[in-house]
Length: 274
Image (cartoon, rainbow, N blue to C red; front, side, top):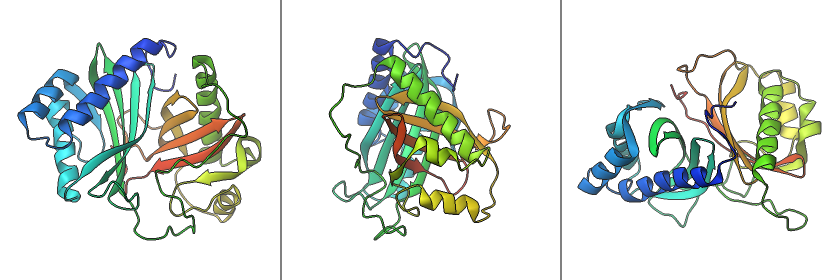
């Protein structure tokens, strides 16, 4: 369910998959034209790997072309990982593309999700958007990347079983709100003061209630690919009833703790990722 085609309980396999992706970024992102990058991509990406994302191309060359395009848009680009996840055969990475890693309000926000099989990437989804400059329009002082939520008391990391419960919970909340337009889910599944990292939305559920009650017009969206790791749930959304190769509208990340959504990040391309 949710896009994974293998067991979500094999921690060792998940760690191995995450290592493949993080090594590929560390070797290939800075100089995608280098021999080292070419070799790393050939080793880690299947020749016929499927790509979803505006302008994305298949296979190892497609991923390197994505990295090269990042450098064309952001002079002196560096990749700064903010959140990572591995669940079943899926790996996700949320990162900043910037020339100044000390400033989270520069460059672009990006997120990629990869499906792996036998140690190689066989499918990927890519999302990116510019980071708005200056103070967020919402009035929030946090950034698109920061981690702000602190649980009331320290707790052990979620088990694989709890991660799966969190994934199902967050996906159901997303679909209830964005597909079914049932705003009552905000009172049942969200912390009223949840922390929002979308730069145009204030913290808390009141803003979302106002958005939906204000007659906003947009297609009904639903989660079609999702994964959970730790207390974070990642979901990729498409228009309701979409086919697998139809555009993807956004990648959202939800922090789930104590049975409520406490924090949210997203990457929303100007053009839906196809």
